[in-house]
Every structure is written in C-alpha cells, then in structure tokens.
Length: 491
Image: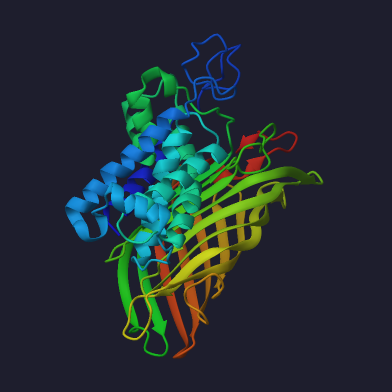
C-alpha cells in the first residue's frame, strides 16, 4: 500500500481536530432553514440540499469515467502494459466474454486501495448533491466500469464488492467530516478550513473548485453531538505464533490514533433520518513497513430513537461496517450489515456509560503475512460482531473497552475448506490533565485462528501496549446531557 495514503489519513485527522477546536457555528438567520441550505429564492443552479434543486446526475457521470481514465493511464505508465494496457477491444471482450474471477492482488490493495477508490467515486456523486443511495449506485457503476475497462485482466468479483460497497461507507464518513470541517467557525470557511476539507474529501473540494457557487452550499447541519480524539502513542508490540507461521518478535514503535463519534444519541431535537446520521470512524498508523494498522467505519443506515426512563437514550436499527485490521503478521478485512444499538446511560449525576452492540453477516478476507506453503489470504462470507463500552467519570476520567469478532468461512470463496476467525479486544484509560490535553494507557490484543485442509490449523497473537498523549476538545469526553437543570448537548 502506498504510504502516502496513511500519511494523508493522519493529516485528515489533524484537519478534523483543528476544525473542532474552532468556535461552534452561529445560529441560522430567519428564513434560511437549516444552516448551509440556500433559500428557495436562490438561483436554481445553486445546490439546495433539502429540495434537491441544483443537484446534478450528469456531472458525476462524466467525472467518474474521466477519473478512471486518468488512473488507468497512470497505472499503465508506472506498472506497464501487461495488466493495464486496456483498449476498447479488451473492454468489449470483458463485457461479452470475460470470466469473472477472484483476483490475487495484494491484501492492502484489494482491501483498502479499492475501497479508497470507491470512496473517491462516491464522493464525486455525493458532493454533486446526490443522496447516499444514489451515490452508492454511482460507485457501483464506476467499480463495474473499472473491472471491465480499467485492466486487461479478467474482472474480479471480490473487487466489485469491496470497491463500491466498502468505498461508499468510507466515502460517506469522509464526506461528513469534510462538511463538518467547513461548517465550523463563523462566516464563510477560510483558506485553512477549505484546505483541511479538501484533504479529507478531495472529490468534494474538486466540485467546489470547478463549479463555483453551485456546490458551495454546505450539507445541512443538524449540530450533532460528537466526540473526537487524536492520540500520539509510544508502543511496545509483541507477537506469538504457532506452526511456524512467522517468527515471534518484540518491537518498539510510535503511532497516531484518530477516533470520531458523530451523532451520539441523546441530544434533544437531533434526528436520525439519513444514513450515517450516527457513525464512528477510527484509524491507527504505526511506524514500520505497513504503517496502516487499522481503519474502521461503522454507521447507522436506518434507525429509530428510543428512551428507557429518564437516564437512558439510544438509537437502534440497521448498521453497516467496513473494517481493515493489519497487526503486522496477519490481516483481516470485512464489510457487513447487521442489527445493532448505540446508547448512553447516566449512571449518576456525573458518570455516563456509552456503548454499541451489533452483529450481522458480511463478506471478508483474512490471512497471514505470506510464508512458504501458505496462501497470502482467503475470501469468504463472514459473520461480524461488536461490543463497545465507554465509562465517563466526570470531566477527568474515561475508560474504554471494545471487543470485535470476525468469522470468515469458505462459503462464496475460491478457498474451499479454509476458515479464519479473528478476535480483537482493547482496553484503555484516559486522564484529562488540562483543557484538551490528556494522557492515557492502552492495551490491544488480536488473535487469529485459521484452518487449512492440507496443513491443519494455526494460531497467531499480537499484543500492543501504548502510552498516549491525547488531544480532545469536547468537554466531558463527549457525554451527551439532556437532563433537567443541566446544559444540553455535549457538556
């Protein structure tokens, strides 16, 4: 995987964090409706998000093929004609006679490079005023076009899934964070905020630049409750392996970890009517050869708010997730949908418990770092589950615990009889020192259990202990307040 992508994600995180450090935006003027939406008297060629006026189906239909053409010309110049010397003849042959296969590209390219490609195509459509579903269809079409015409090789079924479906989830999170960066502060966004938003979602910035005022109206703001943190870590990583999969090791590393929760339940008046009105975005980079340790996105596709008594509020419904986890010696990636719930419970006046539970089916990939006699990774239908808890004690202390599981079978897979199970758990404690400054300790352990028809089973375990300096500008670690006599929203 090109290292520029994780570096870009780190810059993305810094841009979001800087935006959140700015003052909250002011109240909309009378008659404007939601901030960032132009009035109904505006020119029809200026985007009006709620009514759909000014949106364009044509612009992304031209941008996506143009982007793919530039990409394939670049690949042809860098990697040669063998795989990327496509022509109208090879496109027609793929369209009419090609055999769809499971390709053998590298894990990082298939499971992160392709989703990032899909996120870019999705972003062109989304920033043209189209809805989540409409933009997903454009990403689907772009992925199909790339498989048929971007390469000379046979089109890939697994790429078709991860490029568009995983890419849409990643793309929506990036689009929302880019919009949030633009809307923070007073007045029109200045150069630094526009630059930060461009780094987060380049296709959004391209449309704002190319089409001027038409696409400069901001995505309708509903003032979501958020919690954002950025950690700079010193890590000690230790691996344990069985059956000669890879050598045991101890490594000292440094890293950056970014986490954003958007649309936390409990805020009075906040509605969950659009996909990703609640989402959680996280990524971690570490020093070393493969610097992207994880990127994880989960979001509510459709759901309903609910309350239990005076002290608990939540939302439940259909979630979608995209996860990429690569703890040095083995990797897993998964895209899934499932039922779940996210909520907050005030245990006492100053102590809150936030959490998410979800589970559902999906499609994933898992495997070890290549070793003699072993396949790099395998694909298959999967089952995914998550339990996440956060205990917030006053303004000073936060405890986090997360448990994830992935079971990747041989169903819908070219690897009959191969199965993977990966379990990842982490626990951390954070202590606020002053203002946005905190320190913390974290331990993450990831276990992989695999079984191969010819060589039997294998086991791998990687643990990482970290000391972190943490920046977070939301008070009370993002706990949402709704009780009588207390300030509303994020405290």
